[in-house]
Image (spheres, one colour):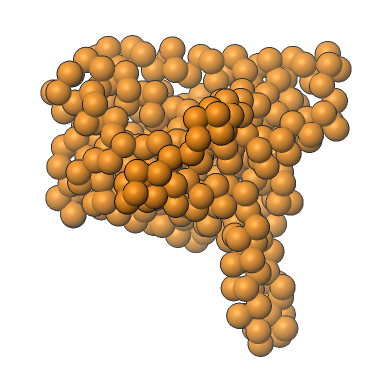
Length: 328
């Protein structure tokens, strides 16, 4: 139960930074322009550096491919569930894409990895192999998260059902592909994967000064993202998107892990692998979903409120995963 007791220690810094961002905005220290500028810095700089550093430096682990398949399938299932449930649950049509990308993206790097590190620390046999498995399971899915996020947030031409949209569906696909290739998070995932492959194939690694620079810049992603999020979460905005955030949190923290459990059981995933996948799926919505929604013209109020509310509720989902699936 040490890991369960450690969850508040992991989540407290998250809420502290959110609160600091809100206070700075309330007292006028950070204005609207400053919050938007910080958002851009994180989206185009810090988050890509964090992804390149974490993926390229990940250790190899046996069995991670099957765990990645389960995580990817659960992500796709959640995206499909969110897409079809959104209008039934009262999500506005204009916010449908934001809703879907919010429920499929998990805060795995800032919540999932630390929670698993704490859980595995009490078991020397699992500590090194378990963390290697976690990182290698997550790495391929980071690309999937960002591709799906771009696809849901892009507004295809003729997306209102017009004849133009029906005559040329390939244009929408081209816009999704072009948007994905321009997205800095997707480019970072591809770069990190290429560096990982080069390391395993030829022993290549970035020169130490460059690697440290990238890693140091990436270290500001957590604080920068959360401060930008907090600065945007005025009480009026939280109230305006509260109902949608409740729905998104329900899908993210309940339906997403249930879909993952069904897939893991069907594919016969081993206990340690199952715990890794279930922990990732039980995490709150990723801060990056708010950043991406703000940069791509999505419903940033819904995304931001969903991140905050799902983070507040995530100790319940993470605690249940720890109790039910952590190998003893």
